[in-house]
Image 1 (cartoon, rainbow, N blue to C red):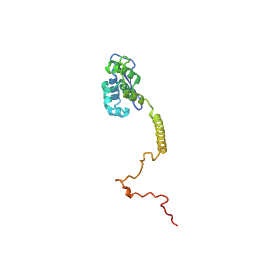
Image 2: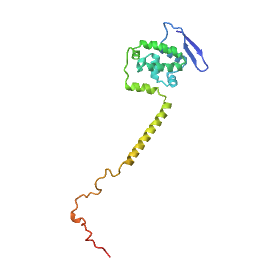
Image 3: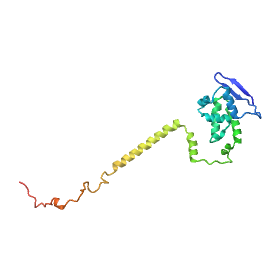
Image 4: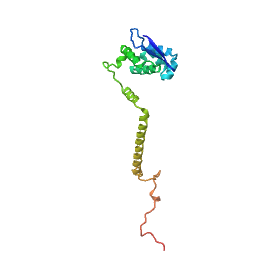
Length: 195
């Protein structure tokens, strides 16, 4: 496969020739060749793409087994090819052909169903959320829920009888008091009035 080198003011653009040959280089070879042609180190690419250096090395060596799913391989390759100014659609087409030959690609194939767990399901849908919009909305509803819960608790506390759990008397002697110390009951006849 022949490469066409086009020079831009900022970056050289390396685009694979559209003619497909039998000795076409792999995606890994194309990524490594493009990076080296632009005199970029793996650390430079890691800074530009925000990918880990071990992932970049794995993409350049064609070691796709370290990725947990083919979707990560495709996404990282798309990001890497975009930074290197390669033809992303052609790179992804070649990658798809390579992945269909890999055993890891069987996980996404419809003939080989892969049961996904709850965590994978939740992670997939949470990754699709626009958090710049969803987070303020979520916080707004969370504050409303907490506020209404606080009001309900306060109303319940206010309607509750404060003497509900109070016993029969407040004072309880440590030992019984003999009846001789208790005051006598006086009848109204025994009471003398003072002039």
